[in-house]
Length: 318
Image (cartoon, helix red, strand yellow):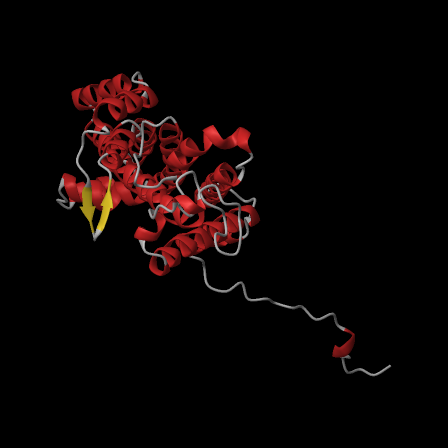
């Protein structure tokens, strides 16, 4: 036997490089992209946005509101892909502009709710004492007001009286503003509670005490330290709130108390279709309903993925 060591017989140890440490944003994205249903949801939302934006560029709004009584209640065909309604308006074109309204209402209403919820909950938790007591009593009193009932009442008495709004060359019925304001002003309370709970725990952290000792103002501490570290909860609540706002708008518009014609929305398209359901005009309600269901489903899937991705204790998708 040779005295020299035969290194080929020695098991080789393989040292794999773990690579650089991932930042919090990279960890969030890693969890999110491994959530298959969430990725399906975000792909669906992107496709919906492409459909609505590209469609509004190709098809002018006048085509969506164009009345052709000779083509009323036409079945889906090469000329009218999704058929026509009771006044001969093309359902496909109105789906495009109805989607615009639904998303605009959802985004603006959620923006109002997020702003109010973050400020009310964050300020209440940061200052505490009598400030916390007053703001939380306001929050609890708002929770006792049924938002859907308030929206129906205001839509009935003010929706048709508000003048038409012209924005970026487009005309919107005044009821759009009523719906946005009521949904936004009555849906911030749950987010305020979430933000308050997070800020109560964050303000006791050492880096907040260090910022105060260095002379940082309350506004800087709040907007540069506390709000960014609560962003995960805010984003998740915003995503799920967006789905809720779209659904509420569709519901009240279906009742005839939300978005008023000639402005198209998926909800008021269903209102126009309800008297023709028994007459075999299935396309008038099937296509708006499918788009509502598809939109809500995709947004909820995306919200579930974001909730798991922002959870620091989640190891499900690592």
